[in-house]
Amino acid sequence: MTYSELLKEQEWKEKCFDILSRDNHTCLCCGRIGYHNSYSYLQLDSLEKLYKILEPYSFYGHSFKEYFEGGLYKDNNEGLLEEECTSEQITKLRGKKIYALRTNAIRKLFYFHERKPLPLLVSDKDVEKIKAKIYGIKTHGHNSSGEDLVSLPCLLYELSDYCFDNIYMINAGDIYESYSILYVCYKNYAMAFSLTIHETNLSGLNVHHKYYIHGKKPWEYENDALITLCESCHQSFHQNNSVPIYRSVKYADPIGIASVCKRCGGSGYFPQYSHIQDGICFECGGEGISSDML
Ligand SMILES: [Zn+2]
Ligand SMILES: [Zn+2]
Ligand SMILES: [Zn+2]
Image (cartoon, rainbow, N blue to C red; front, side):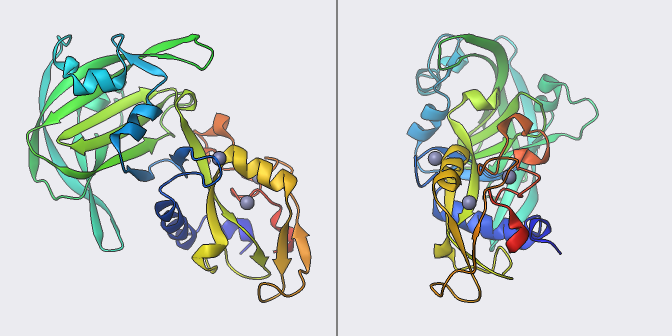
């Protein structure tokens, strides 16, 4: 198996999850929050981080913070729906059960006629059935230069139960080419945003190897050999630093230097291709370097 094939293995995905969780899905260089790939979820430690991510968007002319905390979503909503959601275990991660609520409203709103109901958000509680009041919300985005983006729908579910102990976000980035659906859950709220994700303050994240040992599989490194970097910090790291390759143990004389991936220039990520393989560079598998010597 080649090194880039190894990067597609489950072991590497799990190792990445460990590193991203340790680093709070935050680039250790610039502090941007982001995703490693689609359907990865991240846990936010404060609502302020969510507000920051949604900063480029207005909700009927309000910031998300005003809109949400002020309960304004209850005012200007005509198309109020009610739905019963059921939960289904989607994965089990190191003994922690993660549940997804299955709901039809998202599919109706986003016109996924042929798809099964999409999972809405994660919960760490097993919820048999839950009633939800659904508010349809119009967001209006603007980019960093103040230019308008199209209006995009989002849904806010007010659940009959308190489901979420933490603030979670899922990026379902492969669904649209230019829009992503972002799920957020918090206490008894579940929200689905359709956003032009690259206008949000979210970033593609990579797990970077500080050094390589010839013949080692990507996940066979100690955790302190790995750090989380966003695509642009990853790129500038590889442009400005070299990564040593050791024969068998660290700190012996390096047998070589890993060269920068010619395709992505070291970022490991192509945000404009986030609908294909989550935007991960097909040449280097997200490593940012050419793996020939590994
Ligand atoms: Zn960064
Ligand atoms: Zn790297
Ligand atoms: Zn690359």
